[in-house]
Image (cartoon, rainbow over all chains, first blue to last red; front, side, top):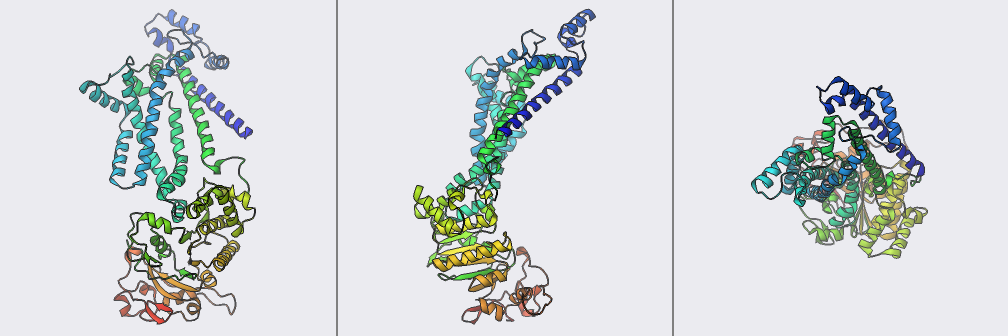
Length: 310
Length: 298
């Protein structure tokens, strides 16, 4: 078990390293921050001074090694725009993003999973078709379109909710709903197909043949099995808690990580982009590890060390 | 699509009945239909009487009390008939609670006894195992133990050994015979293998394309088969002793359920076919008191 854990951790670290390296080289080879920060018509001396100050005149690999060296000590560089430590700038935005992504995540689970189960249990019924129709609409309509529709209805027409910003407690509602609906739609579809797959298994028929009530067959035999594939998509959703709201934050002018990422990328504020992507990679990788453990807990066939030979 | 075309079948208390036929002829569906296990989209007509009580159209709650307690079923693929995420002990315990109201220690003791009964060694440890930790044969023993938990009057074994290798197959059939002798439970053995049925049952019903074409005591079937299909099955069976002979296959294939001939379903493959065979499906008629055949040429 310890060896498995260590191996898993090593792989996680390798993944994060690869993300950092990839992002670093792509960012450094795809444009000059000096031009963006200082504007393209700045005097050549100023640009030269800026590049020297940020070490941009050195070879890329040398910059990369320096970045790694500092990162390992917890220094992720400073924002080129306001000079503050990049990681601090990013972490400040985390609570604001979580304030919409966590409730949205709860919404996805609370709507998506029951809807999927219900649809599967009433396959081909009107309710099933309706759920799946809404679900298809939910994940094919881009989130910015849904966001604009919601704004049009609830802010412009009805005047119930603010259309943007974060100054009122009600400001969070539309971003949360926008994020939640799309996720719930995906989850409903996924849960439905996982349930249908399980309901077709011989052990479900065998449990019924045993005389078990249908409700118990569903709760005790079908759901624990359907939870296994559903965990994958839920785990992925946990991974997107930090950076899954880029578009929605931009549309609603919500001061979270997503908006910071958009402005940092367009300004070529390298250290900030790096810090955000490092954070995203870490959450994703962590979510994946958690999913692996949940798998082992849900599915005895995947447990290591616990299996005996026949 | 019609899978069955009127199945007239009787199982007496304590009897061992074989149900033989090719894949897709309706052997399993007959019993799934009787127990209401075909799902809500299937339509089942006629009557299924259990000690005089009709099961067709009874509320599900009542059927649930019949399933497992009066009529238990075991299936072809034992390893996928057990829930992969629950321990053997829990799955057995579920049946014991359901049918015998046993709980906790009493249930565990009975579960252990049942595993002993189906000759699983080290029962205590096996209760804590998951199905994937057992072999196919062991899982089928667990399925049988689970069926015994309800002390049923009838056990329907749907191809119980098809997924198992030959030695294990023999052991499982032996076990079923032994349990039947001890408990007086009736057994319906569904199989595509006439040999398996011959050794383990008293009477056999031969099915073809959703109908029973011949119903007779096992000896009669082997000594004086009447239906051309039964004869064909026997001719395709190799003999262990005697001179070597070329096996005779039945020409042609089973018609698709949605494309059955108007008359006798077997007529297109039958070497004794006459024009009258194609007029209407032949009705089962008694040849002897215990021998029924559905063939106008028999």
